[in-house]
Length: 93
Image (cartoon, rainbow, N blue to C red; front, side, top):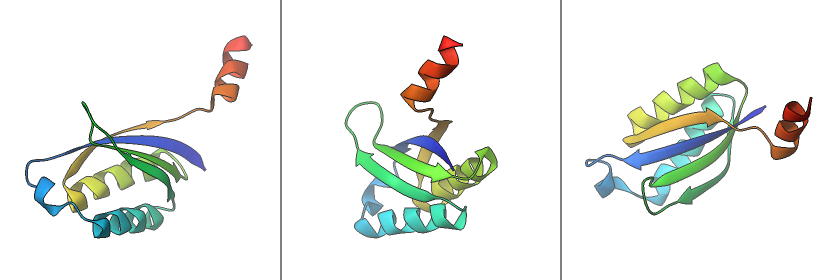
């Protein structure tokens, strides 16, 4: 599994629909794409939501990002995350 960081912003229409059920819906969508939610955060500032997810590959991450945006009204930017020890090893070669 690959770790992905999903950074999201609520749209004007989605603000009024914030609920714990939406978190369950997000977990279900990620599971339908072969992944899982590792952890999630509500944030202040430029972004409203940060999700740390595990998904099988980039294609699954794209599918999940689009499905989450459609279902929740949250616009996501999604990027693969590389553990620092792996990064250090790669740049040290």
